Image (tube, one colour):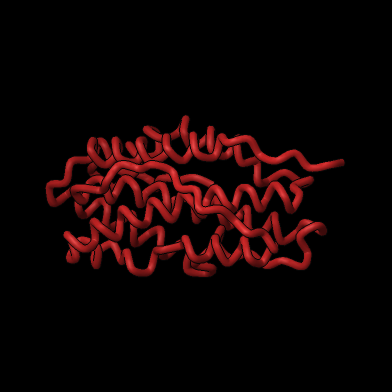
Length: 207
């Protein structure tokens, strides 16, 4: 459920979105393989565990971005950060499954400059693209027929537009002088924490 980049912009040799996509490819695959949310035999207990891990990660990741937004309000407005929070949706989905959830949070580095915010948001926002496929898959499983989850596809029909807006804002920041290497480094760091956090053993489900 990780990030996906866009096509390179015209005239840009090392487009930042392409750099992000290729620079985080291994971590992307690691997260998807670990979560295995497209498993047709996915059980409620394992899904609840995954949602709990994602809720903890998003809570920690968003706290860092909120602190950044207080220091850089103009940048936060340009990136429409106030519309992009999802931690509460993961909490709601846990409640819908009847799962209590935990208070566990991963350790994430502080978000200093806007480059760090862009890298972190790339991981969070890119996950909405794969999330639309996860959402449709979960809706097709008979063992989850009584549950409607929202966190994997928070924007609904606006998913493409929200991702396009984020891509454009990221490219604009780099064109204005932001360091693309720093953006990629922050994304890789965020992805590494997510991959390690999701690697916690999932509960075994009785057959």
